[in-house]
Image (spheres, rainbow, N blue to C red):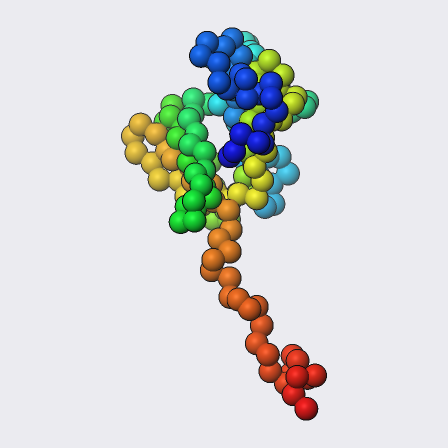
Length: 171
């Protein structure tokens, strides 16, 4: 992620030593066949519900609710040998997280968005086209690995030049 992707105001918030504004990562997971996506937020920007024994926190962005989970995210790096992937570490606050991750054999589509807590409706950076590639876990946390499709594994050129597919080349 280069600095050119962000507006001048957003870069100013990123570079301030002491800022009252918080950078929030919004994650959207959608599994094929599911009607409702799972939306997660890296930071709690507002209380959503105080009716139960535990307060429910999250972020409202563009009319959608993103539920807060204690997580940290490592953005993809740059370079020729670097695989474009996000690494998201989710604290193991409840074992039900593993049940959700194991519920389907089909990898979920993922989208990562970066917003400011003061203006969550303005998306500063959006990363689409990722799939949940793995979720190794231990007693403390689970690591969600989001990867894009690797074009290095695609055959090039795509087809073969033979008389059936290219009859004009063969008299």
